Each structure stands twice: as C-alpha cells, then as structure tokens.
Length: 227
Length: 216
Image 1 (cartoon, rainbow over the protein chains, first blue to last red):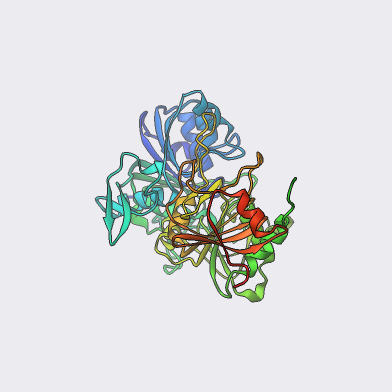
Image 2: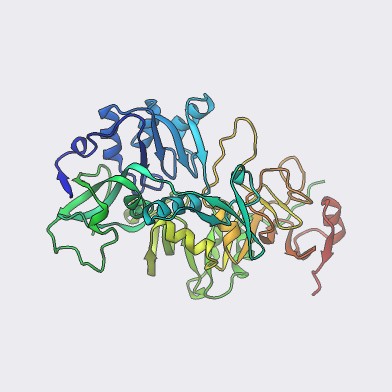
C-alpha cells in the first residue's frame, strides 16, 4: 500500500543501522539527493550502499560517505573527479569496496527483482573481478556465476508519480531507478510532482505502482526541469 | 629520436571514417568520445551511452544543458530525433547481447591476442573503477581501441601479454594509434596503416610479431 508523505524525513523514517540500501543515479543524474540527505539527518549508520558511483562533490551520497555512515560500497565506478570523500575513506581503509562491472551490477539488481536464483554472465570472465566466483564454459565461451543483489530499501528519483505510485522518469535520469524499485523490501521514490490517478498515460508508465511503497514530492535545487 | 605520428583529431577522423553507415556505436570516456566530432549526420550512426540512451547527440551548451541528460562521462549532452531511453539493465543487455556493432575504448595495454587492460593500474594508491568497460569489451560485435602506441616512458602499449589487470580476453579487433592501425586477427597482428613511420621501424618498437598489410 502506497504512502504519499509530505517530507523526505517522513519518507526515510524507519531505516535502520546496518541496512542495505540501493541508491539510484548515475553520477548526479537520477540521484535521490533529498532522500539521502534526509537519511543523513536521521542518523542511520553502518550502511551498505549499492549505487553505480560513490558520490559526487558534497551532496547526497558524497555527504553520507563523508560523515562516516557507509560501511561498504557496492558499485562499478567509485573513482571520479569529484569523489574525494570516497577516495579519502577508501585510502584510509575506512570503507569497504565491492567492485562490479556495471552490467553485472545492474543485472544482479534486476535478477533480485525478477526472482532469478543466479545467472551466468560473460562479463568479467578471465579478469580479477571474477576471482572467487564460480565459472562455467557454455558453447565454448567462459561465464561467471553472479547472484541477485537485493536491498532492504531502495531510494530512487523519478520525474512524476501518480497517487497510486506509478512512476515515469526523465531522460537519462531513469538509469538504475526502474530496476532498483523492483529489488528492495521497501521502495521509496522522490519525485518532482505527484499527479492524480489517470494523469499518466499507461503506455508511458515505466515503474508500475506495485513496486513502490512511499512517494514524496520534493523541489529539486539548481535543476531545470521542463516537461 | 622521437617519432611524430598523427594528432588526436586526425586519429579521431580515422576511426570515424571506418565506422560503417548506420552502425550502432558506443564511444568510451576520454579519447574515444572525440570520434563523435567526426561522425556526420548523414552517416546514420547511432550512439549508445551506457546510462540508458540510444541516439545521443552532441555535447549540450548554454540553455540546452539539462542535468537529467548526460553521457557516460556525466557530461551534459543532447538528444537527436529518433533517440530512445531505457534503464541500466536494458542498456547493458544491449551490450552483452551483441546488439552494438562497435565500441571504441581507451587502453593501458592491448595484447597480440586482443586481450585488453584499461580499468586498473594495480598501483597501491589507485582506486579501481571499471564502469561499463568489461561489458562493452566483451559484448560489442567489434571492439576498437584508441591510444598512443607508446606510453610516456616510451614503452609500447601493444604487447605480447598484458601486465595490467585484464578487462577482457581476446576482445579487441582493431587498435588505432598515432603511429599505426593494427588489425588483431586470429594468430597474427596485421599493420593496416602507418603514420609517419615505416614498417621496419615500427616493428623495431614492438615485442610483437607484425605482418605488413599496408599494401593489401
């Protein structure tokens, strides 16, 4: 049953220490910055964060890492020009890193949401990122076994929700949102706008409402959002 | 004595001119991104970006900058007529499923067998970051590498066996460098083009047996 809540603080209420959290976004695009900052204010710590990158600049995920709330990052591309908080924590041995090829990261999340027990991926075969993973040759090609990656919570950003929780996204801000929405016990979406039921074209809905538990409309800062 | 080959733009043009009409192409971060500057609209080439878009347009400027529309390097870009958006698992299914014709990647090293190393130096202070490189290298129908042939200390980056951690096994099909274009074929490396250097001198720079294919 969907809850449409008034504030980002209400949206992240109840997230516990030690939780595994899927966090949407590719760099800043589609990153649920207001939800992450509400989580920071709420004080949860010892978190495992699954997200493509390891924070940008000083906001959102970067702030969560900066303040020592993240025990472990599961991601594909932590090192960026503006990932200084992660870089410092990593070099100081204060944060654990599980590095995955981006497609295996995405497919592991998708598999969790789709009820798949495990899958063989060719990506990473013969590389150090296959170390310790089961391998198999299928039709002459090498594969590695990858398991689903599930979250206690998913924090995602979408463009619009209707009052049932159906979601539409905007441009490349879609990225990990639709798969993360399917792969967590509780899926929480921040959106630019909540619209009445019937206002979204069913042909355009990307995330059907059954995946979504909480929605909050937030004003995005320093962004330009045209329809 | 230093050898001057072709500059980066000329190399970008060279790669662009080898991309067939209507191909679906992914250009990696860095040097490969410059190839898009030399693809003309009438080529019908459609650019894929790993963060969920096909039909990516040029870099956005001024009013066109939209934080929701970026490329794999997080640089604001534009959309072209006929573009489409999709989520990350679909984007990587396009790669892994062999639906992209060509990807162009940078490299630390490429081996004579087409092994690629481009994601991690393995140095103690280096933070590993792989992104989509492994999926692209093993998934695209053809993987082109663009790089300077020699590293800053003068050692060749086309090698018998990669010393850096691998990105993918036997995945590179062509190597575009400032001094030559190499075709990685089963059991042999063929030099297709030479830029400001003759075959014997090039062969002397490398610890890899070369076949001269410049006349074919």
